[in-house]
Amino acid sequence: MIVHICCSVDSWYFLAKLREKRPSEMITGFFYNPNICPRNEYMSRLIDAKRRCDRLKIAFIEGEYDTDSFLLAARGLENEPEKGARCARCFDLRLERTAREGTRLGEKSFSSTLLISPKKDLIQLKAAAQRIAKRYDLEFVFEDFRKNGGTQAAFALAREKEAYFQNYCGCAWALIKQRAAQGRFAAELICPIDGAKTACDLRLEAISERARRENAGETARLYKTKIMEWRLLSGSLIDEGGSPIACDIAPYSASANVKTRLIALSEYAARFEKSAGFVTRRSFADKNDAREALGLSARDITPIFVVEDLPKGVVVASIESALYQEDALICN
View 1: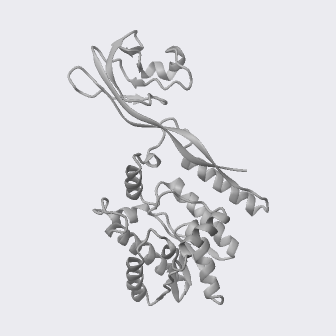
View 2: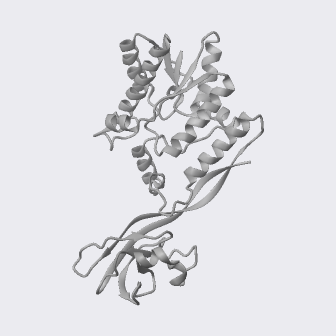
């Protein structure tokens, strides 16, 4: 049997129960989830899912991370709610790829750890899987391990085994909707301007390090920590005529909304009227430590707009960014 694995949390209980119910069955785990975004989150889930299969001595195969296939399948369904048409299309994509892989391997049946997830519609899943099973002449093994307290038992086992608990379903649109409901924005989808490591990066590093140590026969544990993350949401420079001026915005620009006028100071810099930020020439910023020259510390969040040439006349600068606390992981 080939079993599609969606994540580590769901796989701990589902695979154990499946093996308990079908002890003579040879199981192959197949991780195919091109819906997961961004890539570092995908890798965290992949590594921990493989860790689960290694513990059970189950063969593990990674499918392609072909995000274009998912984006094409979900086109036009971006605003669908959880358990809506977009999820149905996502099930079709992942389960059909699993069935195709099973056929390639000569398997007779397939299943999915999605069946244990309380966020998935079992009827929707079963209908999609049975259509695919008929098309590939395979048996779909439907197991409702949620009943009789199975959902609670699944979470308890995953916690006991220190599985990686993701905090959103997987795709970008589900993430955006979930964060909006929490009164937040989807920071996971925005790259930091200064290349600093994000909470997603640190989680992946910790999960990778734990896997490395465990594979070497060492003991390792994951611990939660908090970090502060900064994200630029938008920013612009507008000249007196209302036309935009091409610019870059340096790291650690202000974490509050700023919209004010600028006045020229010298040949290389212009400053906000209220000393809230600066504009510098690219030639100056490239050859000098602009922060030091402007009297700023390395961690100062004063906005710096970098332009080819200093704008003439009065200019309006606008910036919106956020500084917030995020969950990360460390390995010890």
